[in-house]
Length: 121
Image (tube, rainbow, N blue to C red):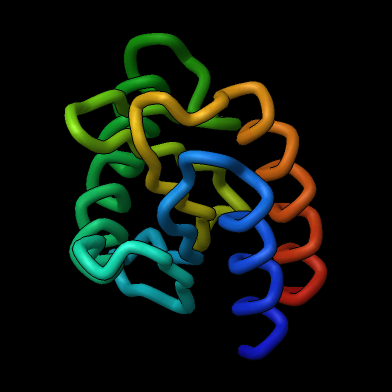
């Protein structure tokens, strides 16, 4: 799991305004995470976002005939969540401030996702 931690910590450090990143299972379990903000409860965040991801997949599949979600963005105050699936069973969750640079986050998260997929394989 050291490889996961390295990839996740590099992602958080490389994106200004990003507080935490985690690999989660769609079952809601935290696989590995890195946070630089002690107030971020990654176990709860992964569980909540897993439920939202499952619901979004089901909704898109039934109403729009497209069950594939490539990325998902939830904007709140004071936090935002960004999810990109790694497979049918795992996803990358990023948690940051509402001022996080979305463009940089998307690029860096895509790079991290590819590296995480290699570790999962």
